[in-house]
Image (tube, one colour):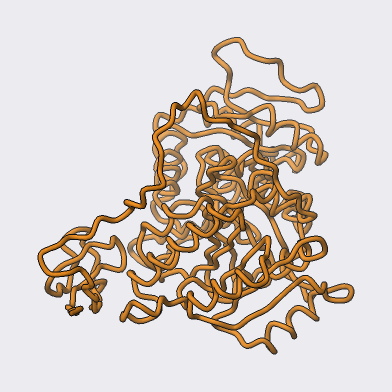
Length: 462
């Protein structure tokens, strides 16, 4: 006779325990232990063996026939870029993001595009059929494709019956946290439900060649809700990022078994849905004020794509004992390092100044190549000297005030030249390398002080 028992599972790391803790003993996260009811179906005195089906075979690796995966092309080039060039049949893709950021809109646009030639099944566990139809009509520029099928269902067994009946090439689950297995007594969205549902969907994809897209909720920390093993089950993990008060959205790849990671696609949320931004650098610089103190242009890499972004700095005398440091779009600790180098090595007195930095358009920069632009924007604001309007700044700032080279410099410089910039201040090369592009004047600086002198306009020039 089957018996049930309770256990407590951490929502962050998946650690199980027979009793509850206010703080997980494994990952030390607070209030993350939740209770689950587990159905024990194993006969008494016997332990079931999982995975023993009798159909697997041991084969020599050299004898296995390998073939290049044929990808399904997409008209949405930004999405195709992040996926590695298109959709691989039989793959499992997980898309996460904040509520209302555009996950369902993006996947519905992709579904309508692929349904012109393939059967697509959209499974919704959160919205009604009427709601999805209203969104599809708003997004479609023409008649809705007849091969796009829709069902509202949360029972995974029933979903599998629908899949066996219509035989789609693509299945979209919106969202994985709403799907339940009837043989499990735990609630929808629990760790065991999410893990087992994702595992069965992966098995479906690998055995039938059906591509599965899963939409996932995120926690308040910004990670996908559910066990961490969920990201290990799927082939590709994408994050849709952006501020709700900004129209731009970034689609990042943090895991991809069929392509490069750290790729990014840029979209703009409009009335007709997610519109691709083919030249994001030009869009980000469109509202830039020329010769305004405190503004500098950095060239950052998002995967294989160079992006030109405006970094703004503002210094103002503090009204309190401890000056404030505010970093929007860059790492806060990185800002503290740059401020310390400017104070100690350059002699800029920031000890009594509130310091605010901002990356325009809500972007986030994680690489150190933007250090020089951040330092120049701060110095420009403090001295009230504009940065040369035709100059970009690329380089990492060291604690001794030296500039250090960053990767993919040639790609960054070509992108700057393509957008009309004439000069670039970069770290001095200490060894022979590929010549600089001829389309742009490159000024090499060994130290931060030399770079500031080359980038800032003199009082007479201003």
